[in-house]
Length: 186
Picture 1 (cartoon, helix red, strand yellow):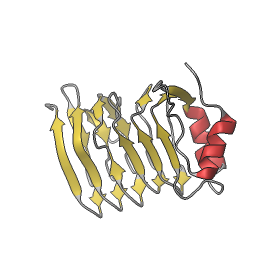
Picture 2 (picture 1 turned 90 degrees about the horizontal axis):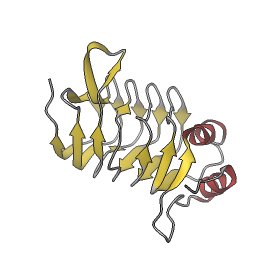
Picture 3 (picture 1 turned 180 degrees about the vertical axis):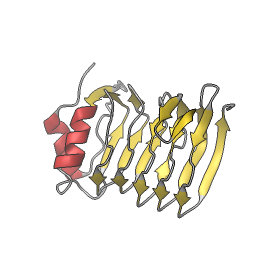
Picture 4 (picture 1 turned 120 degrees about the vertical axis):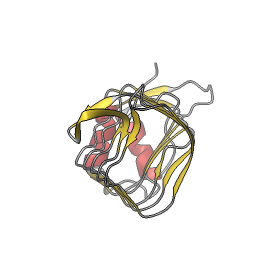
């Protein structure tokens, strides 16, 4: 698999361009550790349009827990090796759209200034977190604060026999738009 290098990613972040899409339609890989490094160390150099990845495979666990990222993160038609971790992070916006095999989202205590968009994605997983010792879910958003909207339009959410979404004490400042297929839960 062709991988996106640090120089290419940094140039795209500075210019606000989409990284990953190729004319051949072949997905390229990017290491999660490189994405974290860019969110942590280059945040003052990123174009206001933010990090925009299209048709990439995120290699490794994208762990942005506790980080403050002042620009939006957009993943369109991407694949992930494991569930992204954004617990306790402060983000401008998070978009995971058209991701057909998103293995979950761990976002307890997440603070978003803008929208959380999971539209057209298929989220499947069953994770335990410290927010509950007796429940498992594909998406965890307990005590999350979303300043914009929570969008799950044409999404499929499957907790694999457990809950699809666990979102105790969530606060959403905008609309909640859900036209989703939600799997059965306990």
